[in-house]
Length: 285
Image (tube, rainbow, N blue to C red):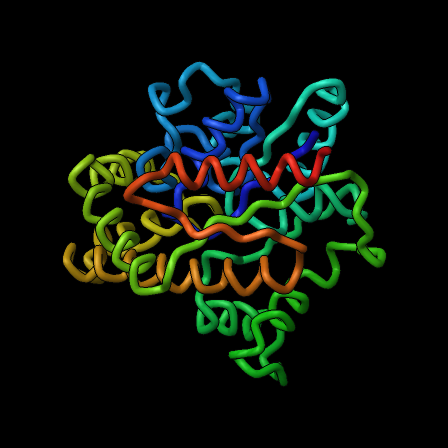
């Protein structure tokens, strides 16, 4: 059995994945593009050893942040893990939709492909990047899908994507006001837990890689260290970009996959777990 737990940041995906992994004796495969990088812990909300509760997590915290780990790399690694665990239960967990779809659907990449989904860039940042490639660009800055496709058009060869594996797609959600409040609170907690110091360690090493320049929480604090904005402005920008990213995650998943959504019960998370388990029963019986 393959489960895929998706949804925006801060809805409880990690906690649900751990509980289901214990119940089904499953291995977990990380599906967060930024959590693959070593040392990028606080800003990516990477699960701690305590949170993992001894459950094996694959494709987590194993890539040097100076290296550009692409969706093509992820596809190869994740499919290898599916094959290695074909007799076991597998749980994908994370919010990087393209990585998940590239793995589970018939996406084909050229060997030298360096596809980028640009999830952590705003429309304005995407548009400016596209202008650098073609100053006569005719794509509107709000047409995000076309901009991403334009920036990647020489790097990817995608057939009509059909699903390659039997997968139960589970999404966690909450109302928007609550989600945005949880995101803001989570950023404040990250700051208290040492996010500024974590990012400063990369800055002091002069690490200016693609991972650092695209990851929310890192790119904003680099602006602070460069004296472009104040710390308060950087924190507010992290919150704003995180909220916008969550909105894009919802849009992407709703348009790309057949997902069964569950409202997270934050007062009694066990009820959410029970609802999901009942649904899994209906899909496997």
